[in-house]
Length: 335
Image (spheres, rainbow, N blue to C red):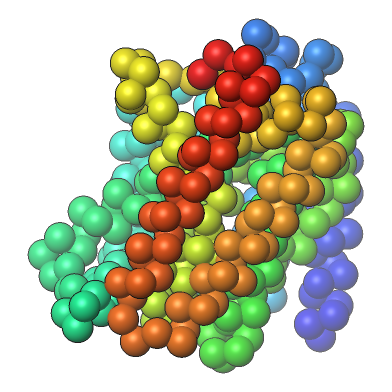
C-alpha cells in the first residue's frame, strides 16, 4: 500500500507541475528577472503550488486520522503556503509575512509542537518553561525564512530540503513516529517530482509558496524530532540554511547595512562565483556540505551533554564565515 501511495504522490505531483508550467501566466505566477536574478528569462514560479497542494491532499486521502488529529498543524502549513502564494503574486511587505508565519507557529504550539528544552549543558538541563512559546515562534519563523533565503540557484533549495526530509523520514521510521514519517515522506516524494523540472536549467521555480512552506514543515519536523534526539543533532541536520542566514545577517550588520536588505552574498552566490558560474557544481558542493554537517551532528548522540557539540556547531559557523570571506576577497566580490 505504501508503494502505491508513493507512486501516486509522485505521479500526481509531476502532472500538476507540468500543468502549472503551462498555465502559470494565467495565474500571474511568473518570475521576471531583475538585477539580483540568476536567470535571464521569464520562468514560472508555481512549483510550490504543485507539490504543497498534492502533499496536503495526499495526507488527507491516505492518512486522514493523522491529518485530522493534527489539524492545527495542517492549518498552520496552509497559512504559510497562502502567504507565500500571495507574495509570489503581489509581493507582500516583510512584516506581514513574519506576522503570518508567527501566527502559524503559534498554532504549532497549540498542537503540542514546541521547544520546551535546549538539553543538558555542563550538567544543567535548560528548561525553557515560560519562554517556550516565544522561543518556538522565533525558531520556526527564523528557519522558515532560512529556506527561503537559500532558494537562489536552480535545484538548491529543493535538493537541500529533499535531503533534510529524507533524514527526518528515517528518524520517523526508526522511532515509529507516524507524524514525522508520513509528513516527511509525503513532501519528500512530491518535492522529488518538482526537482526534475527545477534542476539546472530550471523550467519552473518553487516560489515563496514552496520555499516558505518547506522551511515551515522542516522546522515543525525538527521540533517534533526533539522528542528523540538532542537539539544539537537537529541543528546539524539543518545546518546549511541556519549557517547561511547567520553569516549573511552578521556580515550585513558589521558592514552597517540592514540585516533584512537583500544582497548577492549568500553561500550559493559566493561558491557559484568561485566555481566560475557552474551552477550544478555549486549545488552539489553545498549538498555535500549539508550531508557532512548532518552526519557530524549524529555524533551528538554519543554525548550526554550538549555543550561540546554546541561549541563545535558555533565553531563551524566561524570556520565557514572565514572561508567564505577568503573567497570573497580572492574573487573581488563586494559583500
